[in-house]
Length: 437
Image 1 (cartoon, rainbow, N blue to C red):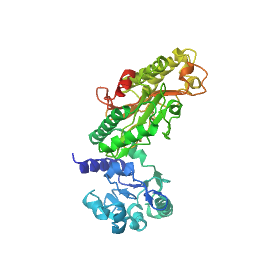
Image 2 (tube, rainbow, N blue to C red):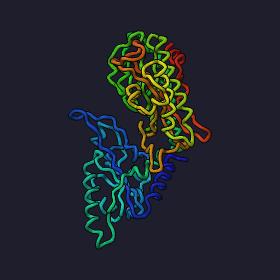
Image 3 (tube, rainbow, N blue to C red):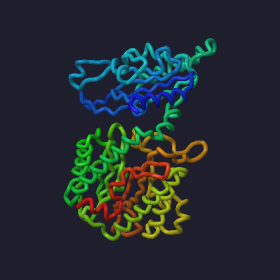
């Protein structure tokens, strides 16, 4: 199936779910500037991209069966030769129809005039507010006001505003083959770059050197770049979950936590590994590492059809709390302590999994009206248990104070169970140390 057919199929599913009396509006953010005239590399809006494949900034999508201009309309930035001299060629209005298959395409400047005519008769508007487009916010609010005034006499006009995620998130949560292929490639690139970067881990190296090696490895292999700011955290830095300063030099006998992922063809990977800077874990470090590894392995086994993301989390939590008891960080009966978050939350403050796709923390609820969302083939999620021993911890082995360990892999739920997309990167302690050789 061609990419154009993939996007057309997604739009057809959304239009079918919307029905005949609704309109969907997705507005992409404008470009970001740094300083007077510095452009930040643009990341396309994930919703708009999922429906169209369109990557240029500031676009707006309209889907509606009732639109007289066509069911699929794009408003885009027009060609600007002077601007393109500085930032590169763009397709403009012509490409929106010729390449991306829009039934109609217009310059963004026509939005205020044309959008009300396109969606003004729909009863339900699927649109986002407060998403970086105040011009679109004003139009949507104006459409709701116009609908309230017109509906009593015309029987038409917007009366309901709904987040587009109500339609799209459940569809994006289950990946199609096109998406799985791209996530698999992002995972492959990330694994390869981590293989290279691990060889640079040594006393005296800078956290920033490892970060640079990873980012360069992603780009060298054809990725867009990093899917999120790379975390390279030595010792106590790893107890800050999203540490991104990456400004310290590595010291022997401490652990280095790396959390990184490539973005390839807009899809993300997300992997964490923890390494001994000296090349060998101390006995206490190895014991703590093996607790996290046991949680990682148990959670991956739970990532299967018919289970839930909470089942995955609980499988990890049972292993972590048991290990915390064995190492005397907490005391009590592990089965009873699990229900007492105050006992272990300081050591494990986050959940075990999140969805993965066009966004690192991809869209899709984990809990719905009927309870926890059940895993289905095609869902992709991370499995990332960890333990974080703050410097001021008063329990457990003193040598582990200021230590963070996280082991994370990307998992595709399959008909038979699961596929670990990042399995080529060893997760066990001996494998982590061997990568540094």
